[in-house]
Image 1 (spheres, rainbow, N blue to C red):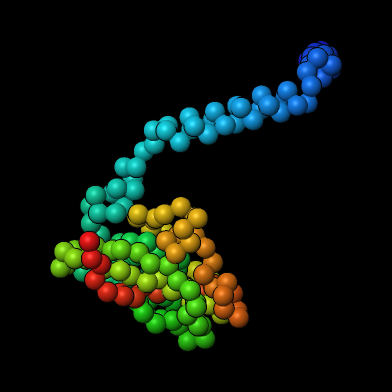
Image 2 (cartoon, rainbow, N blue to C red):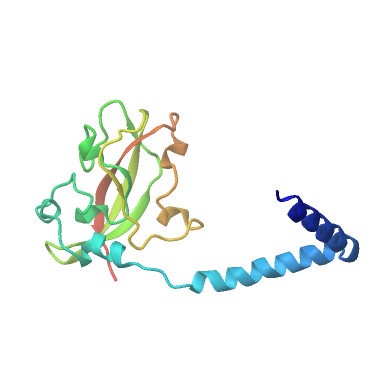
Length: 178
């Protein structure tokens, strides 16, 4: 049925291979990729749902009451993982049978109750399989992956003896200064 199409494609491919060198073809392909890299990042994208999820829309009553099991809780502005407060631990304590990761990432979160910004340290709790409850992935002011201390998409249990991720805690380190 598509035999004519196959023959046409083969004929054109052979003709192209006879007239164009590999180096020339690679040069053209690389130019196209570099050109696309400059064009694609400036394309418009919609952040309206992210704005609503981070306080721009209707506030969650549980988060407003300071519920540490709600993803909208102010300390979770840069969290990525299962909340230890839903997994047998607390905001600052790992559940029994797990150990805090030796390395962590830090976020600067705004506390709406007192209007101040705080440094929050996020520690993964390691040693058990994933908790599977209260998954939160808030990327407010997240930095690219080359800045490891500010990036939350890394398995921070990698420095522990048991690198199995279970959940994440959010401890206030101190007041953020401008």
